[in-house]
Every structure is written in C-alpha cells, then in structure tokens.
Image (spheres, helix red, strand yellow):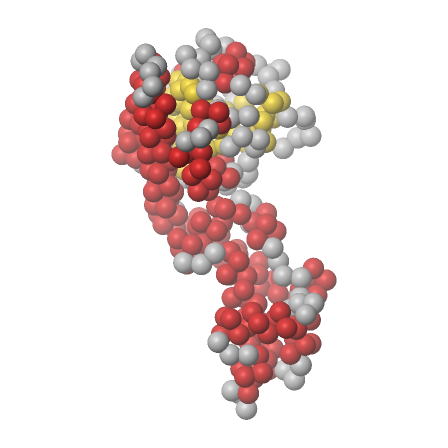
Length: 306
C-alpha cells in the first residue's frame, strides 16, 4: 500500500456523494447496488478510512481491495467486512462494468448504539480480517445472504416506525451469524490453502526456535506470526481453532514445550540455562508453564529418562 494519506469518509451521505449516488434514504444505514456506482476516475482517492461498518458482496468487479496477496480460488460471490477506522486501498481496473454486480451495506455505529448488536459485534472476528481473507460464498450461501440484505433494504424503504430499528438490527444479527457459519465452513473446505498455512506455521516456528531469536527477542508473538504468514491474527486463530482445536498461542507453547523436552532429555543444561535459551528471563516462569502443559516439572521430566 502506498504512502498516500488515507481519505476519511465520515458519513454514509458523504460516501453516496463521492460515488455519484442520490442521498441515502436513511442517514445511518444504506444498501447500495454495485451497478449504480459511477465509474472510477484516475483522480479518485486510492486509500480510505471509513467511520462506519462496510460489508460488501462483489461479483465480476474490476475493483480490487488491497489487503494482501492471497489468490481467490472461488468463482462465486466474494464477501468482505471492514470495521470503522480500518485503512484499506482500492485498485481500479479497466472500468468494464458489463457484468459486475453485488451490493454494499453501510452501517454507521450510531445505528446500532445501545442495542444488543452494539454489545455483540466484537464477537464477529471477521471484521478484523483482511480482505484477502474474504468469505467465498457458494451459490446457495449467496442466496441466503442476498435475501437478508433485501429484507434490510425493504424495511428502511418502508415508512420508518418504532419497530424498524429493532427489525433491522435482528436482520443484521442473522446476517452476521450466517457469515460466522460460512467462515467456519470455509476453514474446512479450503483445505489446500489452509493446510499450506499450517505447514508454513510449522516451518516458521521451527526456524524461530532453532535460531538465536529466542534469546534476543523472546517468544514469538501472535502478531509477529500472523504478519509473517500474511494473515490477520484473528483469522489465523480462527483457522487454527477449526483445523486443530488450538489457538495460535497454544501452537507457540506446544513448540516451546517440544524444544524444552528435547533439551531436557538430550543435554546436561540446567533448567535455568534451558529457560534462558528458550527466551525466559525468569526460570520460574518457564517451570510453571512447563508443568501446566505437561503436569510434571522440568526436573521430573528429566528424571524420567534416568
């Protein structure tokens, strides 16, 4: 992504204006047909920050959102989620709009304020995913999502009354719960890509634990691992939990215990020396973690080999 200053869009009305659309029917929520958006100009901003939630499903679009390099391997609709204050870039294609379709859902935080969704929206971790970790929908899944979007649109098209917000909030929660379900399916079905991530994770941890980085830098962080694998921390942990039942932090600890057992069983190093080589300032912290993971102390483990 370039060093260009991000262009901040504060309101849904401002987004409509920028994209050549009529003013929104509701100032705090809007569903936009991708086909209605005017062609992009070379002078348009390339990097954005929105002050609202942005959910979209695109098909055959000539616009790519810049978050990473992973290749898409599904031909069906691609769905992605952006939360307020996320920085993302837009790369314009050749403006061939003949077949492009899809929708965008814009939700201002004020719309969900003081509702159950305001309390629960952080549980939908995919809002912290990168767009190259988008949700790839089957035709059947796409139909389910499209129906919910139509319900939301029809509700605010109607005369707004005291029930409208509650009904739309309920539809949004259904939408996000389905997205959660479909992401879970994706972790399981995108086997080749996801198992490549697992392989790369194993290689990364092995290389790190075999180097001097442990002494100089300490244990690798979840953030560092995710960045090295070119995925977001939440996506990586979600993927690992589905495929292995363990979080990224647990994988780090597993590798740590594996190396500790190797040193305890094959060297004469003291527990303090091993703790230092594994990146611990205090041997007590190492011994406590080892016993938590193995139910025996380092010395008890070593004694079992004598």
